[in-house]
Image 1 (cartoon, one colour):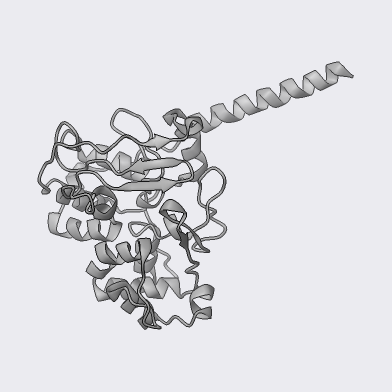
Image 2: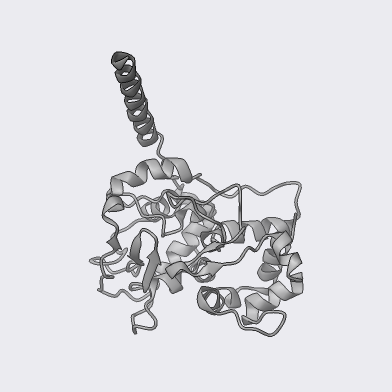
Amino acid sequence: MIRPLLYLVSLCFFAGICGLFYLFLAAPEPRHIGLSETEGDAVRGTYIARMAGCIGCHTDSKGGGAQLAGGPAIETPFGVFYGPNITPDERTGLGRWTLQDFSDAMTAGQKPDGRRLYPVFPYTAYTLLTDQDLADLWAALKTVPAVTDRAPPNRLNALIDQRTLLIPWQTLFLTPGPFEPDPDRSEAWNRGAYIVEGPGHCGACHTPRNLLGGLEESRPLAGGEGSGGEKAPAITAAALEAEGWTAADIVAALRTGLTPDGDVLGGSMGAVVHGSTQHLTDEDRQAIATYLLSD
């Protein structure tokens, strides 16, 4: 009786090791950009930076920090993270990075030295960015004044403070892009889908997560949690329609931060409006509304 039990335990252990080994081997690879085809436009890249929320996470405005030189604390169930310095400073920022290094970080969550990035940086969404948007964003970042400064070190739970564990995590939860338009949908719908699912990374707060911190892809935008445990409501078509939201209401809220009943969007969403959506074009805000209200 003991021998079959030992055999079963050994088999399960071996299967577990093989499974973990597979997850390491199957980790997503960085997306390689053809540099000859991706000359960046810094002006357009500044717009993408607003859309992607770069300033909010990488600038400690309340603490008087310089633009993009390091962000405020981001509280999660796994610990406290700080957005790093992404100015062109060569010592503490991205000054020694290349466009390919930047693409690797944005689309595969991988630093130039091969270390993996914690998914509090939403590369699971940024991986959908087009090559041109990546090149434009990189061009914009290079125009920012270089600042020598380091964000505080992350304060993580001991069990997850191992970047090696991010390799199997990425295998499970990172689906490399870029975004592929749906030919059966309108141009506005596809633009909205690109913004919401990609640079806008709305699901980072509005989609529930599992115990490992991965997004529950079967419940997109069904309600989630922001920094510090702040509750983010469902923004599915059914949820928005049940609350009486129209496309015009969504466009107005993204521009002004006011809800249809005259209330003010506060907390994280207020910061998103202030730093991101109020700077978008009406056409892009309308595209977002079109996508969110679609079945």
